[in-house]
Image (cartoon, rainbow, N blue to C red; front, side, top):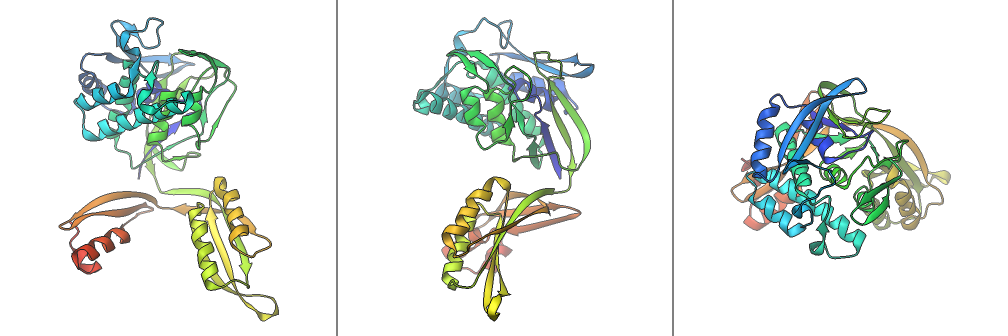
Length: 387
């Protein structure tokens, strides 16, 4: 399975992400030409090879009227509304996928800013984030992801840095409030560098594209791009993008279980449903024999660590158990993705599982059943009509 793994040990910024991904492309000049064409003359994006801490990598520059992004001189376009950004992206000569991805990233940014400032999303006016240099960074990353076409994107926990950062609203703590909003639910840590390492743009791009934040899985590496940051630190200031093949994934899960002998079947079924609603990856029952020769039911579920507490509460609330056992286990799974298939009666989602030398495809039952009911056909007839 083609996998893109992002090492965010020195944070993430839009220019670092685009530089790291550009480093994986065989024809960088062609990609830059396409990106600059999409920007329509509003800015010029270039890439140069630089050496930091003895390591070669790429640094991406966005020049607007001769000034590189981040310079003290800002331009009239640096204060931009989300509506104006959507209009700009709608007119850009890019594919529908790139346009949709870029729009989604800026919507994430707008919502984060709206939450921080207590205003409606449509009333948000970006400052640093909304300038054309950020548009160039976001479009560049979206374009590069489309060209690479990874089957899954993973990333490490994100180092955000520490200290304070100056922005249009004054001096703020790191991570900046908008960055903190965007990183909710994503593992991050401060690290030892007193500087802003993860920007709002970088956080929004990670939230949009990354499917899972975890340790790097076993991979056959085919390439690695180094996206260099502008600042120099004692530690290499780079975001690394690893490209290669991975065989599904192995992760540590928590298995929770309890014995039940005084609940009805309906009550146990309801508890099972509540476990799924609370975030269980899987849940099941097994028949068991208990003390005094009473028949009973073993209720079990699998979950990730972040869902453990919620599921423990679910066990105690919806069952009669007095205690829940737990153990850690490893699960190796096939990589999964969802495609859309066409039939004469409508579209059907198809779940695709790959890895370890196998590939499986299964049409989504709910979609098949809905089309069968609407058209008075059997499930088999709908399945056979999939193109």
